[in-house]
Length: 307
Image (cartoon, rainbow, N blue to C red):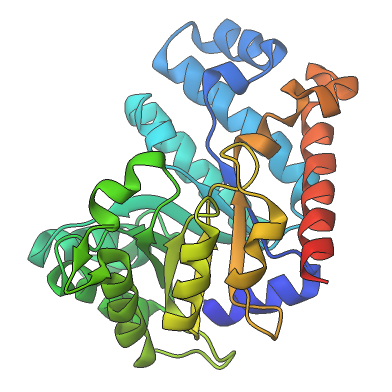
């Protein structure tokens, strides 16, 4: 799957991923009103509104982008109907040939880790059938429990031609409470980066990059520069662009000289673009068109920084 991701980035010339992280506050009133009229102000109504909102964005941006990244917590808050909307979103994005990065941040050990890996990236054995559950192409994984938590994912990725992005240096303000702690004179994130590079070296794609990727936030560009050297053949998923303060000019060192090696995420900066002053002219009725323009602007912003 890393080969497909790289190929689609090259085809679109857009090293970006749209984060489908819907909150009810982002969804225009006309979509919510229609969903609530049919299902009531219920979990089912909220899930329907989320699904229709996502569908509109996918319909208007799919030709511009290589991938989407739905954040499962935004769906889980609406219970079983929300999880069903997550699955519908994954399937619909797949029908448009987009690469799906399931932002699930799983991290456990043994059979539990294996179950997470099978559920999101693999196929579960049911009698004589092997059936995919959520069927994302990549999943985000927390490495805090060590190799025991990662190896089941790598095993499933190898079997299914899928991939993972391992958290190394996250974009949130308090990430340094643990990730920046010095161990033998070096910050923890560097040690994690070295381990990711080690895991990935054994699992390279034909494109020259590993299907064991990592997450490094746009809000820490100097650390990103260091980690790019620590993990030269690791694809970096970069959150924190736009709404969290990350700027395109800060991301140059996340990429390799071949112009590849990183994919930058924007979530509410794109899906809630119509709420921003720059895109207010589109209005809530045309929220998806505002999202399309925000994608075009992001592509131009990153391209100008890289070139």
